[in-house]
Amino acid sequence: MILTNKAVQNAKPKEKLYRVFDGHGLYLEINPNGSKYWRLKFRIGGKEKRLALGVYPEVTLADAREKRAGARKMLASGIDPSAAKTERKYLTAQNTANTFEAVAREWHEHNLEKWTPNYAADILHRLEMDIFGVIGKRPIADISPLLMLETLKKIEKRGAHEMSRRAMQYCGQIFRYAIVTGRAERNPTADLKGALKPVKHGHFSALEAKDLPEFLHALKGNEARLFIQTRLAIRLMMLTFVRTGELIQAKWAEFNFDNAEWAIPAERMKMRRPHLVPLSKQAVTVLRDLQKHSGNREYVFASVAKPRQHMSNNTILKALERLGYKGRMTGHGFRSLAMSTIKEKLGYRHEVVDRQLAHAQRNKVDAAYDRAQFLSERRKMMQEWADYLESVSLTGDNVIQGRFKNARIG
View 1 (spheres, helix red, strand yellow):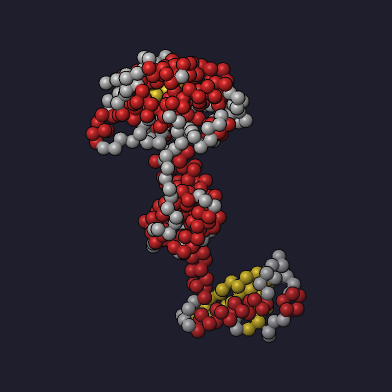
View 2 (cartoon, one colour):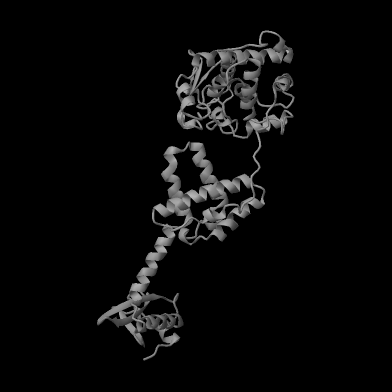
């Protein structure tokens, strides 16, 4: 007999499982616990099979009949609806496992060993902020160049041109990883060359030697009311000209006061090589002052709000703005200032200063020289640089006419 909605609704459980039929193989299976399941019985290749169509009442009688009609069409074409359903489940599972976000996180995990922690965290943060929300849930193999472009354009529209370009680079690497691991066949970012607005690269804002007296006076006067740790951070950055990230993540365990050295481990360096910073007497004095504030902490520049963490990456930049140097000076600018001033005023060779800046060596000849480390010259240079800064802060740039004028080293 053909079922009705009322008959389906009124089918009550019994001590044993039983079935009520609707015709053409469709029936409702009623279990002793009251649950009701739609099934379809069919034959293909001389074998009888059954196909689960869903649970009542989520799947109504009309829904079950519609699914039955679809299955019968497959059978008429020689397709096993049960096998087709299994294939759909497999593809769905594959697509879920192979979404852009899933593959991107796998790619990220795969590369962790060769990245610094900060760099790895920054990449993941950018993907989470700008990419995953748009294409993260899509199967990576289905992402077209147009969809990729639309995603990148959203970043570009807010004026983040450099970040849009970097996001495209990250995504390109993720697609290439998907290709070699069998989850995609092409890289849609390869078709986007020239589609994004060009990035205008400029130099980091930096002071010149003639600006030092005024800056040092402003830092010492502290009309901006900076925290003592922030002022000491700027002082130590001037004396050592390390990168901002290398400075704010400094740990007390890295410092050897007996040898006046700061050994920065490879995992915290941009070039992934350990770096030695000879410490001047003035730098040691700054560190001794810092010990009064954070000597019992892991980080030299512990966060005021969260002492178990280091200070924010923007602390120094914001401090320079409060000192009145917005657009004129950045944390990275101290590196440029040191490079130009030490060469011009103290007369040191470029390669000695360059080695102290921990730049990547450009060729095999530079790398060969690099093995010598120039440690003796660097120790002398760092002390003379500190003396120079101290003299400038006391007498102004006329000090150049004194002991530092025309100094030539090496």
